[in-house]
Image (tube, rainbow, N blue to C red; front, top):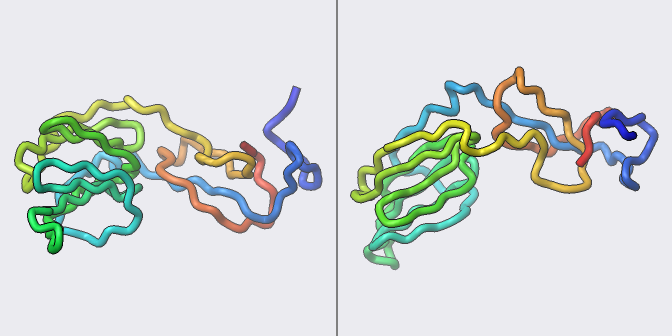
Length: 165
């Protein structure tokens, strides 16, 4: 039998605590459901790109989707931004853009890419991850009472946290 709780001096799986660990960042259900089309914003952490005719849909990990008019590839025009908290992945087929929103799956009609429309929200379609997407790391255990984990940040800690993956 093993336990998630470790002693401060005992290495876990051959890993000593180096003073860094991951801390969960939470959002409330209300914060997660706020999805909006806004003016263009700067791209900060690009992910997947979907091409539809002369338009690009670029995932900005954790933030949402940029819509860019690429009619002239030498002068792309950033048209708008779909603000989706905790959006890390997109997929598309035909006139439909699919985006994750923490535990929900969102479906947008992009038949007119200049005016994307949220058509459907499928709640709890994606399992919540209560641990960081890394291996052999220490992390603060997630607390469901604080909200939904939307991302993880690496921090310096004085004390070894109780969780390891």
